[in-house]
Image 1: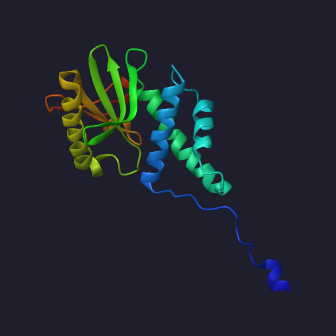
Image 2: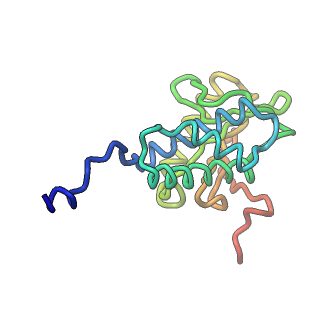
Length: 185
């Protein structure tokens, strides 16, 4: 009888899938919802509310809090640093173009650019060649569909914004370096 009292009961809550692809999908989904529903940068409570709605309801509380923190932080960083409004307007999210999917597509007048969101811990320099190859494929697809209006792809590294790059229409790769993203000397 004593053994039965101390035996842990089976949990009805499940563990979170914390793989980068899963967390990245949640970041993309939250960005999509917020861009579609708000015409301004979201407040933290907006972000938290959207992320909480996207999480599976049967997550154990500790996993729910962990996923909320990681996803909401990445989403908040995207909007705080990389949101292009009001000069640019969002044209689409998770847009299938030719044979690729563009994470976020922006338009300013006739010019169109895409953002490739990178939210994983290894999204910085260790995965840079893969991210550049992906951005170049997206650039080719964008040029195929949108023509000369498609001017580039920003590789937005949410865990290290200063590592973010832009692949221009002519293939040049430039850092995205607003004053808030400059690395210390």
